[in-house]
Image (cartoon, rainbow, N blue to C red; front, side, top):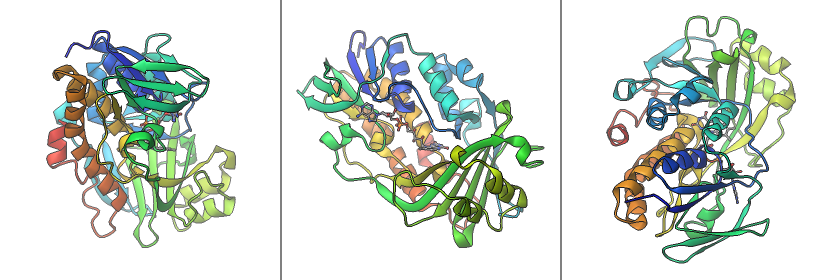
Length: 372
Ligand SMILES: Cc1cc2nc3c(=O)[nH]c(=O)nc-3n(C[C@H](O)[C@H](O)[C@H](O)COP(=O)(O)OP(=O)(O)OC[C@H]3O[C@@H](n4cnc5c(N)ncnc54)[C@H](O)[C@@H]3O)c2cc1C
């Protein structure tokens, strides 16, 4: 399908919205992104961009912008709380995509994505409050009183998506019974931990189901941690006390305990972990969900951000190859939903203490083939 001039309104300027804006504008679509925040902003933590995402950036000609603010990684290690290596593995699909996983700070990632979009494509201060589907077009209305009609409205508005609630599912996000404490700190505070590798370290205490995800950001001289612990408190952004933080690393390597004793509490982002149940249908003929809006998943497989990027690539290709927007949206769902359904399922399952010999369940089988 010729995308030249297709009027596309994307709701949300997160990873999914920004990536999709890039992919569709390269095909000639007339894209505008509407973001509720008044400016770009992201909480401080690191994420891993998998080979498939890096390959998408290369295809869009923006790999240089991403690589400039990230560092290449070899693989991951699963380790006991006291530092005994259980399992080490290279990132899958390096050979398929000819590149490896890159670690990046969340803020650098969104800045890089927004930085490669044409001036004026993103409109901040636009909070979607209403959406009407007319069949082959849809109209979106924002809190600031403006309305826009588009040939395609893309709901990239995250886990609490208003677009999803309007058409596709009114189910609330599901609490996982866990809190995640996240922060970035100086790599010198964990001397020796990343001396001879740039791998993702997963320290897992199976009996208490506590995880420490440690991700090096060597290009920034920093490390990002994510401590995930069981909790009954489903408050969206709970406060974490020093006692809770210190207790979360009780029995772990002394260097990690020391970080929890000394790090400034206001540097910690604390979130209760939520995902959503699989959504049966992601689209009408002129409205579609992508990213967390379509398939928010728990962070245990580190696939949320990657899935957002791969949705962007998948949606652009499906529209390009289809005869109509409606057919393109159906093809997009058919290609992507089996993969994200599987990631949602595996991520919800968490880590199995009796089976830690495969860091990437679901990425060596059919889903990896589909993704390739
Ligand atoms: C602290 C934290 C750490 C994480 N760590 C990892 C990780 O290590 N690896 C990984 O793969 N994933 C991680 N994730 C998950 C990953 O960040 C998400 O999967 C990813 O951000 C999804 O991107 P998205 O663009 O779909 O949604 P979001 O990033 O949530 O973006 C949605 C955007 O839509 C905007 N919006 C919402 N409602 C409206 C509205 N009504 N009108 C206009 N705009 C609206 C929001 O302001 C936001 O900018 C983490 C998530 C969090 C919160």
